[in-house]
Image (cartoon, rainbow, N blue to C red):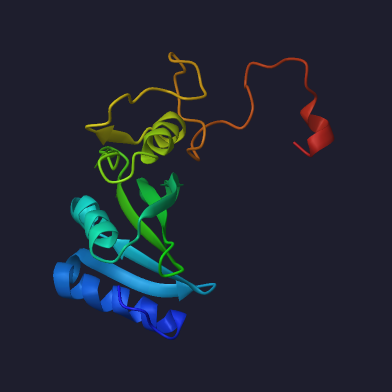
Length: 169
């Protein structure tokens, strides 16, 4: 990526290069709190990440995590990428229906995504095809649910030692 005077110029270069290469697979772009946020189609996420890494020098995966959109039965994937050389950070989002929570692994691009993908699997149930060791990272292997989904109960309904009247219930 060539050096530009301002962050807005760098953001615009990313938008222009992605839309020229991927067209309608880039669904949206906006600036939120001075951070460029891109939304891309699920079927293009690996290609977009590879392009951002190889062509635009986003060589560091800062974060990869899940989201649950309970109101529309969907799971999302959010990544923050950083180009150290250009001093530039972006956010990339995509989503999938809850009934098909599968994405390709990104360990071939950034080996550090290994543990982040395991965490997204453990807490949201997002599976990553091609992952070298996709198993729970913090919960028990036989844990029956995904605790960061919004449909997970906040409390144990079998608990008898608690008086809910203190909490307005």
